[in-house]
Image 1: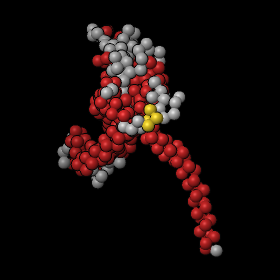
Image 2 (image 1 turned 180 degrees about the vertical axis):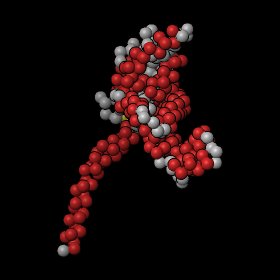
Image 3 (image 1 turned 120 degrees about the horizontal axis):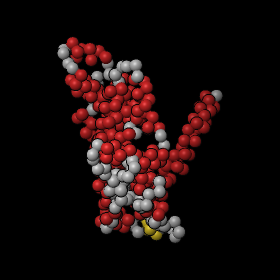
Image 4 (image 1 turned 180 degrees about the horizontal axis):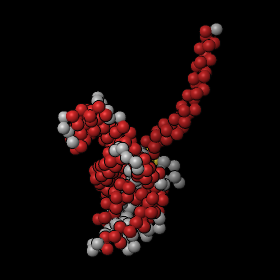
Length: 302
């Protein structure tokens, strides 16, 4: 009787866990194993894979100038774009954490851009930042300034993408706002009794308590930025621009775009698989380094 009951529980457990296990094996583990294998081959979807060892990795790291361009552009977004996006989201969260009659309205207003489909938002920003008739350059012209060629000038293409990304930081803002809601009011009241102003409360109370939330957003934002793709692809080509993906002059050739080109434009699947594994290693190492450094600046006790 006891054995039958145990077998029934085991069967029920396998029944509920089975779909997840099958999905993991079929849609995660198997593709990863095959991707690792293809990264060591010359494979173009037409001919069977031919084992070439580490040649794809050697070519990437030593003989591919576009790979270096893609790495440089991606690191630019990680080092400059991501901090700006986090800062904008944090500032909005701090301001919207204040109590007021229109607080709920403005929270909704600033969150809405993050639910707009990325492709639609990119097309919208192509119009907003159009050098000839865009709203931004028209406003600059009315003030006596000459507006830049945002997505047609290599010097301004990445700043234009950063500006576009800052507009859609509502999701990150909501996470910051949730963290701010957990700051004990008693700490602010004690600080006010000691004569602390708004700035001192922000620096000595709010930010230290918010460091776990900052750390979470930093990790998630870094992983997402390393895979930056849709906005640059739409801006440079997908919405009808005359420049190829990664243009102008390779200024928006991000790692994910170059990987996509190798896989689906040039059909170099083995080469693209090697790129994917290098990206995985870079993200993994960067994440581990951030976790290692978190002990020095992330505070989990209030």
